[in-house]
Image 1 (cartoon, helix red, strand yellow):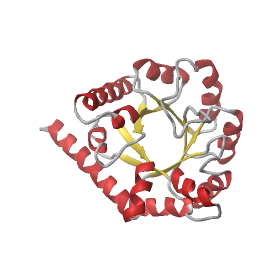
Image 2 (tube, helix red, strand yellow; image 1 turned 30 degrees about the horizontal axis):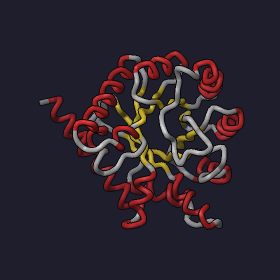
Image 3 (cartoon, rainbow, N blue to C red; image 1 turned 135 degrees about the vertical axis):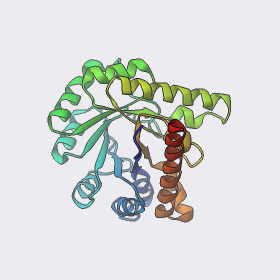
Image 4 (cartoon, rainbow, N blue to C red; image 1 turned 30 degrees about the vertical axis):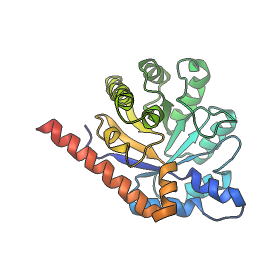
Length: 252
């Protein structure tokens, strides 16, 4: 188990609030700087086809003005591939995208989309961009990611977070634990994210083989009440405590 668990802060919904009224406030780049100062290890931004939150100009500025690694979430389209190759972010996380969805509703179907995804993964990898696939915690999806040559998978934690506390959530957590272990066996770096909150982050942070969590909407929501730096610091502390306790339990 890695002692250091990275936190990627997704600043999409700072842009959502800005776009609700137009103009330049609140500024996603300022949010990225605040997150960096509060303990984030990276910044995540999803440039959607419909540009409903993050804009091309945001990606330009994030690429040029932020020192933390940028993780560009993107659909597997020629338009997004061209943008990724032009900006050469540290990482590109390939996600499913439906025009009518409110947010990403599930993991990428790497099994069914094997032939479609392959050239995108190959071109991004050839450009030196770390490619991850955002997938449900299912063995077949992990195997497909390995077959595609993606070095990283990000496990979709939405079902776990949405499940009521008790047996249902425990069952979803076991799926995540098993998938993280399988990712390790396949030689894949394992990340996780989607819907994580102060309540749900601890058990995921404690999973062996998970080395990065990506969290956004909840942090932006909490920022309304207490500031983004405070929200990121609290999440960082909860993650670190859960990881330290898991390491202690394994070494005991």
